[in-house]
Amino acid sequence: MKYFLRILLTFVLAVAVVTGVYYYTNDKTLPFETQTQHITTVTKPPATEKYAARKLLAKLDKHGFRLYKSGKSVILEHGDNEFTFDNWSKVIDSETPKMYYSDFDGDGKKELVIRAVSGEDENGKFVYELYVLNRKGGKKEDYNVLLISQDTWRTVLDDQVTEELSQLKSCSKILQFAMNDKDSPIKYKSDTGIAKSAGYVGYARALQDSDGKYMTLFGWSKSKGVFSVKDNRIVVEVDCIANYNETHVVQNLGKVYFTLKIDKNNKLEVVPKSMYFKPNDKFKVSDPRKTSDEEWLFTRNNSFNPKKEGTIQWAKYSVKIDPTVFTDTEDLAAQETDIKYVKQLNISESGVTLEAADGFTFATEPAKNGDFSVTINKGKKNEYEISYTAKVSKDLKSVYIAFDKTYSQKELKTVDISYGSR
Image 1 (cartoon, rainbow, N blue to C red):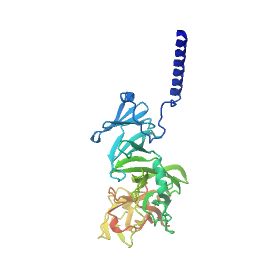
Image 2: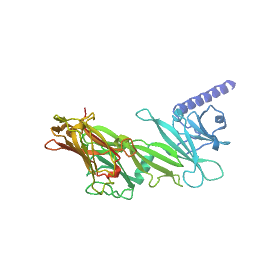
Image 3: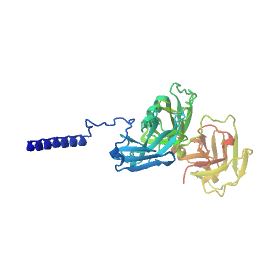
Image 4: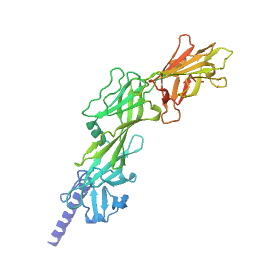
């Protein structure tokens, strides 16, 4: 009988070990355990786990919060209470998470928001997700968890906002990013393509081909969002990517910014009128809706009279505009470029005209190859490259650089002109 009991005990232990190993290696839940299935589930840690090895991830001592990682779980400590969360980011300890404690939904109660690494993008840069911890009702401290992942914002945005990128009919140089509430379609002017019924509109410059011609917009997309928390609001910034018919090269136009808020049902909403588009500096253009209602002309005469003949290959010049002066004369003989061979320069609301001195003509290649530019207010916040097309006259005695729209004289503090290159 003694030997039989020993054999029975050995058999029971063997079955227990095999069963435990099976469930461990297959990540199964044992019959007497529970396993978290949803990000919103919160469990109190077992007494044995309370003293297990854990790594401090972040803290918010002012409000009594500490965040730890222990094995596959994340533990939140608040005062004397501890809460274990499963299914959070596996790489949450790649960078110190940021913690915010404020009233994010406007219900008078504070929520805890944790911004943590969720992985890396194709360039090896960290991408993030947000965990919004909202107190459940009742006397017992417990939390619902709202996960805002890299794609959560996209669903919310597309459900609530209409976003459209288009190319103006009146000027193919300019791309237009228009946004409006989902239930309000965006309407456009038939002659120019400018949006006339959008909550927000932003503009950027299209890509050019090797001949300086602006390419045709094919489509666009949004990259993954980057989250930040500012003034009790969740701010998302997203790269706007343009595609063209003429090339496989994509263009990172700039960023779309908008703000998310958490409603009282713990759901996300786009804050009304929070969206705007900011182009990258090299693609910045002036707002095409703001044009000049009056004609004006500034003329600068060159007192230098060259004695030789030739071709103007490279003319570069900077003019300071005084709105009280309409014509003046300067000696351009000391200028390094071929601008010294230009006898007259005219700037109007719609373009720049260069007149060649007697015996000189303009090279046509810069106009054909897009090798020209007109930049206003260089070095200032309102600096824009405003040239659109260039045309040399049939007799080659003048060149006209058209602007991308009409400009009032008071908008132009300085004008930098370049035609051709050395």
